[in-house]
Image 1: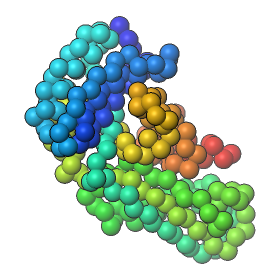
Image 2: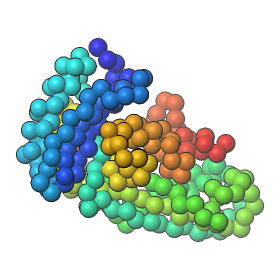
Image 3: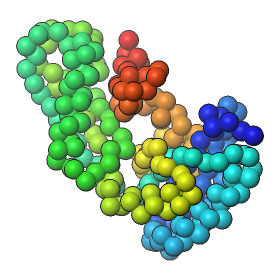
Length: 228
């Protein structure tokens, strides 16, 4: 039996195909990789059949149940939006806590303006004015942040959530297929390997949205460790 912590399951969906991977995080290789082509449409009946045909095979192979999955979406409904924040630095000291609070503020602005969106990626855009090119402790008069959000609507995912729930599977992370492919060469079989690396800080500018109640990592802590 393969332990849950040893592997991750990825479901990739697009108008052209569905693909499901089981990625061995210990040996860094795919244990399972199956796909089916689409006719330029995400069709839930075909997706349901695809899941029916593969989930049982995977669970039999690993001798364990799949309880959660990472959903990778590539579709023209994926939103790519930028938000900029410039605010007076009254304390004259931009430290990690100040930056953390400012990133939360930017995220809240996005959620207020795009209430139906699920954030998949939150990426800081580097330029000569933002803190990534400076020391994290400084006396600048202003903090300037430019953040790019990649997201998908709740309506897009709700039926996919229901399909997976029929197999007692929850989606524990949404990721953008187009974003992941920016870090790939030509081998799409490396998609889960790169997705796994991105989840663990491959892009130094991506804010890792980790829950505050995680035992080992605080909210944004993984991001800031890269600059400490």
